[in-house]
Image (cartoon, rainbow, N blue to C red):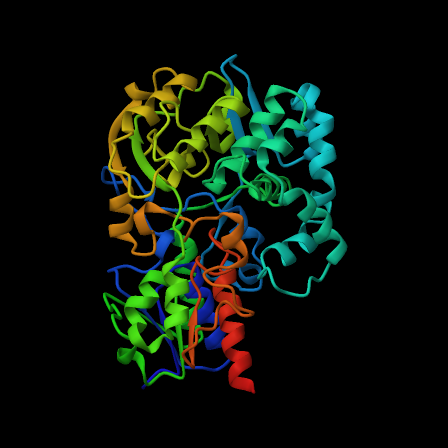
Length: 472
């Protein structure tokens, strides 16, 4: 039967949008160009048989906190979260490690002189996480449910991460916050980068930084299973190159970027809207490595074995220097590395006694430089002997990331630069950024609010906008 709604793209936002439309009674179909669904939630044997690697997203704090995903019966469809003992570890050159524990008190106790300032900055938001998440994972132009809390958060979040970090005491606390803020892909001196440090640190205390048992693909599988239970369908290997191909649907939901929207819609978009989409900027890229290992990572700091996520970058000043380089078109000799060791907590991903590891650093958009050696030297810095454990590696430079997922333009895994202007104009400045000027056509990718991250909220709000329009 002809579907009422067609969703183009099967990433977490496309899946979320499709579920909401199907729950509303619309015959819903997802069309995915790739041979497998999931977008950034794919897990594959990238190195050797028997080793499961997350091809993109690996650690999912916003997924477990997402109001959208929390409203769905995903555990009924096989989703099983794994919570490491600690959310995050950040080793330092003296052999110690700053650790983001689930308990803010335990974290503060481990930060020495920085403990009290860490507690003072984060505790008010940890205690109010459920209320805060409802507003920060919403479009920027909305009536907040908790205006005083959001205002208090905003006064800090709009500041540069460098300024907030310097307000903390001690090397360990400053480094721990800087690593969280570096997820912004921006120089730490940029306005608004404080939001990334705050949100990721607060989420670590409030909900943890979990992984999915069996790989991130299992979250996509659970979303797809729920969609199918509602009568929805997913077609893979079914690219949509022009809107005319889906013209019969009452609703078309596009989980694609602004530049892809221009290609798909063409002259059906008004010239002014097209120009605004062309001005949309993509940010720094990821250069990603996956390893099959013959044993666990030999960390100098034993505390690193308590967390799935390990930030490798040293001090606040070192991380700031590394994150400033991509904006100049450069890669720092000692890049900030985001490192994940899932098999310490999920043995199902590798043969008995073996392990996997996942990492990336930030490079200029479209960068063609091979930075494998720089990343591995950073790992060796804090885990001497790491290279001796490598059985095989998979290398994904920015071009390979984009080849595997067209939404990752130039290797940008955030769906567009996260600079402050594009937080409020994502992808263009409109009261409802999900509605396009074409009747019945909506944008629901990470290039719409609330932006990148696995949370499904862009798809959730885009589907709500479509349903509200249909109800009028």
